[in-house]
View 1 (cartoon, rainbow, N blue to C red):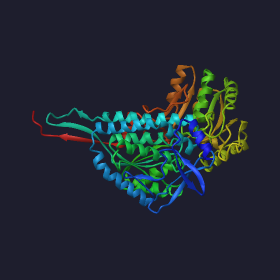
View 2: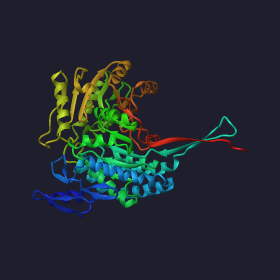
View 3: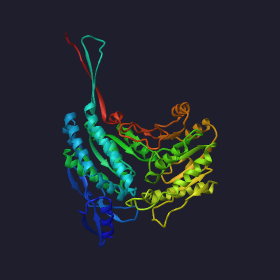
View 4: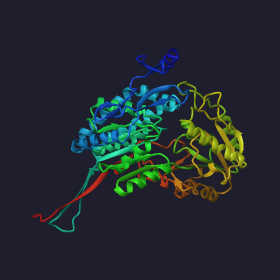
Length: 514
């Protein structure tokens, strides 16, 4: 096993410098930057009661690390460290914060290959996608390092000649950042970089399934000179998550919570924060329509469908959930899509030609299986896949294409979060909009058309926060990411992403003499 892992590691361009450790008599290897401690107040620490949980590779079940299973008392230490650090960090100049963040960015670039390998190991996504995530996630650090120096206030025109009105922007305080598994680097940098630029200090709670990337980032933040207590990373198991998150939401020392995850959990977090009047940012799930009109370029639509649907095996919040295809182009689109999907290879993401990895865990696999089985039992036509890929591994699910999908089926309204294409035929533009806007969520939507008037009409009427037009990859550091309706509150990315972490202070100076 060790020889095999080393060989794969060399093929990925990594160093062969490793640490050998023993788990149950088995010799496993760690890449550089893999940490088995949480990061609190500038130190690598265990849980107070020494509890741990394992992090495994979903592609093969191999144990990667054992990290602290922290509870409320551990989180309280992290919050107090962040509170103390805030007194200093808030008073650093924007120039100082910018320079420190640039150093962090440079270190992240230097170690991008190793970080990408860690992402692939703990999330299962193909290595080419992990490298893309590192580039994407690092872009947020670079963007907000620059944005730190552009958090400007205002001088307002006064009604009275003896008064001056000023508005300045100040950091809100300590913030709790709670993220999902599917983008273990970018989910964090999108939040953390904006918070640091604003002058906030942070307690980061990464997903249980993918904490190792967050810990690697913390190590590089430490090396970059981010002061102790400014960034803290606490880890916890699935069982410990509810009390840990509850404690963060209720702590009087945390002034804001930013969460990425499901709508159901987002509602709970919002409810827990409400009595304490905390600033809340929620980036929640969606049910993205992927609308292909008769005038669309089929090749562009199919290529975009592959990129947007099968990235991370469909485990992305903006992945298309329902493919709405107009009847005039329906057969051509479906036939071409099937041809391309059949070319996708499943397997261990560390292999260069693999395009589809595993589900992150058993619960996610079972959810996808249940939604597909339900649709088939209610009359959906399964053209491809439709079952677990046990010959590949325990957590793999075959790329699946379902047609004749109707609203009586659960996957019609529920987010699939898996490699499943559900196709609905429609006739008119009005019908496509009605179907698209039915869900109570509205994160992203996709339009494929060559009719510019139609593009503007549909873009305006789609009840979503983001629209991709003839494009399946829409995320970028410079743009506001977020949804409408029950898909969340606030925006991440772009200059708008600072807003969740600042307070406006108005100052009136009176009785001036000129």
